[in-house]
Every structure is written in structure tokens, then in C-alpha cells.
Image 1 (tube, rainbow, N blue to C red):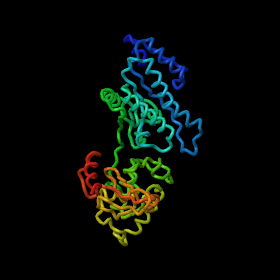
Image 2 (tube, one colour):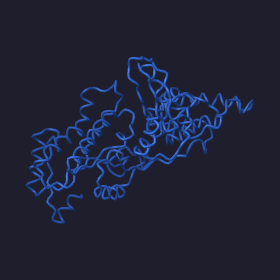
Image 3 (cartoon, rainbow, N blue to C red):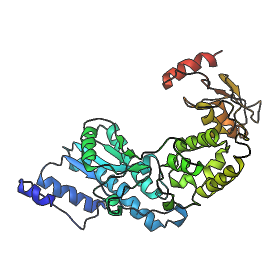
Image 4 (tube, helix red, strand yellow):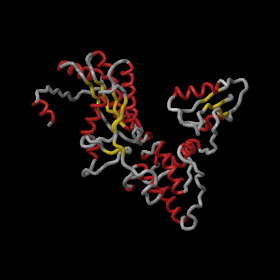
Length: 371
């Protein structure tokens, strides 16, 4: 036992059981008990309670149970340590990639982690120590180790198990820097796009990092299997470039492996007759394909000032809209019909490159808007 080893080194070990750190009185008791041993130098919240389920199947009790261990406990530790632990040097909480990137069925867990991160951000803004670490799957100990069968490699949320030795090395690095939110994960190896894939099903599985299709519910949408926006773009590009399959953004969101199998069967029958029957990509690559995914509109304007088709009301003031650094005017099309004024989008232009910061973006747009 590690505790016995610590004691052999002369370390005073105090274990408090039966106390609920999310309860103010219990949390105060824990901190006061620790202060009696010596000035508290560090607080770590490593608690985790998983009650995974889609929202409609969650109960208030199951949501609260997972939420409380993260959010309420950290809130109590933050409030009370400000007065009870004046010499505190480290305030660390273990968050998860489920918060940073999302994971199906873990809304309660992700929300609890997100609140912990906001608390750490506020502490740092107040000049106090605060650090939230978004870990991926951790091997050798903990929940993932309990799930592991015969040391079989698991892929969870697109990450592999990170060794404890690596976690400790990263932890030391994180404790010596000032950012309130950091992350560490081992991304599951995958073959990019369709390279090395025998068919469309295998190509999409490679992108998602799914190694065994037997472990995946065939009717489950890819979004619930961990597909984020970047994966969606990659899947759309791969289907168009390698298989001449053209899908809309909505099609991608509802895509599952059953539909992919049907596409593969249809493609297998069609290929011998006409290998290139589908519409070609027309040379669209990179940012153009990404914008097609976002807006479902390949008619992209390269102008800096783009007028939107709005419900123009001459009595309303003019509206100016600015997309992000990588965005374009077309992303506002769904909003246009709801705007009762003249609306102009100021964009950097999809064919230009070089803008790397908001300040550069502003310096470029201000002279244009004053013309």
C-alpha cells in the first residue's frame, strides 16, 4: 500500500471518510482538519461519478449525483479555502475531454466539469491559484482500468489510455504554468480519410477511431459516437473525394453505419458500370469544402462587403456582421430572413490568407467600413 510507504517515510496521513465535501459543514470540517496537520498547500478534486444517459432518460437524481461530485464540491472548496487556507499554492481539479470536446450521454458529467473550469478561471482572475486539467482516458488505475478486459486497448472519446507516468510528468509541467485550463490526452491512432480503407464504411470508421465495428450500434448517429465538427468535415471530404458521394450537412449529422453499409452496397453495384458517374468535386478542397459543409452553398462570395437578403426596413439602422477569422458571409444566411434592416457582412475573404489575430482582422476591416 502506498499509504504504508508514506508512513514509513514519516509522512502524517489523515483519511476522513463519511464526509460530503459538497456540504458546507462537512467541507469546512475537512479543511479545518487538514489545517490542524499543517498549512494546506494544495487542494485536488479528483472526484468522479458517472451516470451516463441521454437527456430524456436522465432523472433529476442521476443528473445531480454526477453533477454534485464535480461542481458543488469544487464550489464549496473554492469558497471556504479563500478564508481557511491562506497559504494555498495549488487549487487543482481534474476535468475531462468530455467537457472540452463533448461525449455522447455525458451532459451531466460535462456540465459539472465545465463549472469546475469556470471556477478555476475566476480564481485565476482574482489572483488565486486555479488549474483545471482536461484528461483523456487514463490507464492503469481508475474507471478505465476497471473497464479494461485483459489489458485490451480501449478507445474512449477518441482517446487511448494515458500511462500514469506520463500523467504525472504532464501534471508537474501544468503546475508550473499560469493557464487556468489545460488538457492532456493520447489521441487514438487512425488512418486519415480513406487511405488504407477497403470501403466507405472502413474509411469513416478510421476517421472516428473505431477499431471494431461490432462494438458500435449500427443505427446510432455518428454524432453520438464522438464525431466532432472537424471529423464531420473530414468525413464529408472523404466521401466526396474518394467515393463520389455528396451529402448535405444535415445528412452528415444523421449519418450512421447502417446507411454507410447501404452506400457501400450501392457503390459496389455501380462501380463496374461507371466508376466516375457522380458529379466531380470541381476542384474544391480545404476551406471551400469546409464552407460547403457549414453553409451547404458552394457559391462563395470573395468580396469584403457582402449584402445579405434581409427583410429590409428603411426605418431601422444598418446592421454590420463580422464572422470569425476563418468564417465567411454565407454563415449568416440562415439569420438573414429574421433581420429587419439592411445587413452587411464584413469578411476577410475566403481566398485571402495571412490574418492570424483579431487585431489584424480589425485593422483590415476598419478602413473598408469607412469607405
